[in-house]
Length: 452
Image 1 (cartoon, helix red, strand yellow):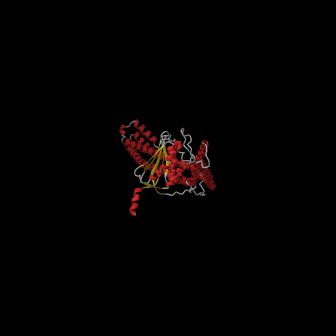
Image 2 (image 1 turned 30 degrees about the vertical axis):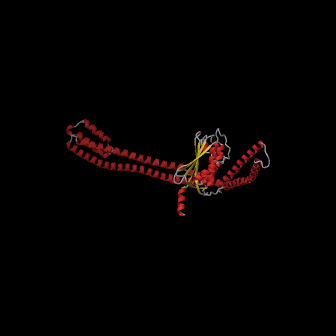
Image 3 (image 1 turned 90 degrees about the horizontal axis):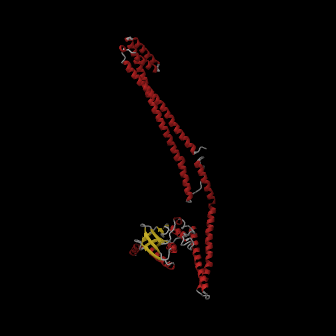
């Protein structure tokens, strides 16, 4: 098995080796080129000096200089021609010296022509090796980039897409033969994990259905005795079956209160079970937002008064007469949950403000602001989960089911909306949710009257 790392290392070694090899060859040929050029330059210098020789000015120094030039010659023909010239120069024979100088000139001219050819050849070789030393590594890099894109990135992208499909429950397990490399090992590991999850999927779904059925059945079964208990407690508290003393009345009131709380818990659990099983059906229609606000405030007036908290509302322009496409009962349930929480956490004399603003021509934001202790960033990420509540020193654990915000979140999302909270500790909290569709009720009414 050749790993990706080994392949990349091999290609990089070949690229580097090719570049260094041809670089070395170009360096050697360039050295030869420079040596030949130096010899040609020296030959031209010698030829110029010999042209200026004069037998009438014969000196031993010139003879020593000519002998030194002769010792530097490697070609026998040049060596012999210069030797003959030196002898003629020392013989003081003008006729012989003239002939020997002419012969040496011809030899040097021949050497010059051959050297020029060699120089041209060396230049071409240097350019050739430089070209190969550039092109071959570039081709190697192009091949490496191609392999990196199609041999590494493409399989990784494919595997990433399969993982994403798995995350969004759209994954269909497909058997394949992964390559014998690191990516293949990664793919085999993912396939094994996916296979294990898929093997257990039916069992998990069955367990989830069993849980939802249990919650639904248990809640329904609990409702019947609770109805009887609540009715009996009502008869006792109203003294229909007999007069009660103050202690007995107080105990009956506590029992009634806790029974109501248990009924709310059962209703919340039923709602949550319907949402989780996707059996909750919304009855969406165009409904008045001002009327919804009024009905919700009216239903919570007694609770706010008992908590000594003021409840106010504002519907900002242009929503004064707007209608929203919604299940008004379910959105009122969301509002009731959020406002009830705001009242619970507000101090005595505090203000809870219900407000609606138009974000654009389609979306409406409804917010509930309180003057409570605020919520820490850590708790903000938890409070929309089931059975979770934010706590603080003033309200260590406000009585409730811990399902209100989870149900509210689910109901808003069923309306294709969003829900969230903006809060800082000590500065209160603003719970908000956004609904995606509204229209001006007055405009619709005018159109309907014209049509009639």
